[in-house]
Length: 214
Image (cartoon, rainbow, N blue to C red; front, top):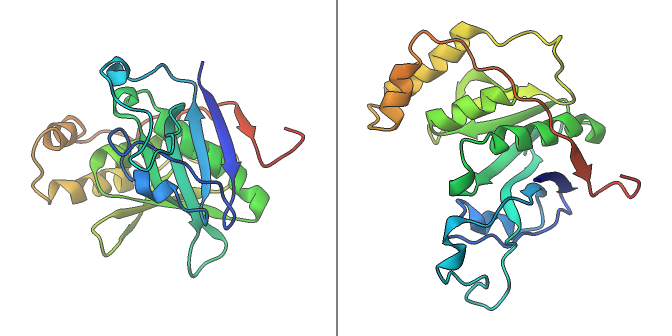
């Protein structure tokens, strides 16, 4: 059974050693100036018996129990805005909604640290869809890196929250269509022509390692 855990907040967050062969952005998790949250307890990856070493080249052991991780920190100009900087899921565990659920853990706890909003920038339609499942919605803005900027309120977003605007959701997908992407992105976008935003995932039960009474 997997466990969702909030490990720490910026600027004194913990560090993680993720295997760069299994995780995107692995090198971004070794710094301590970002908060971290993880999913742990998933079965070993398919290549575990193929002789893949558990130690990095410098001999330090990887955090092999991590299935997904997110790093986050305050916006550089707006202290009330928390940004999810890097979100990564082990490839063999994608499409199990670990990423959206992990994002909801951080977002639902962010108001405890006086954040009003939580944001993330996404560069592909799969991440865009996943973050809509976590309660985020496109702001209508893009970054200089051609990423779409999504936001949601901090704290719990319950069933009584206003649903995301379908038109805005579709407009965001249209931004990706303008990029003339190949498959699998193109087929993904074709399947969502005229679609409504996806249903939100539930916030999973999670452990707050920053709270000694949790």
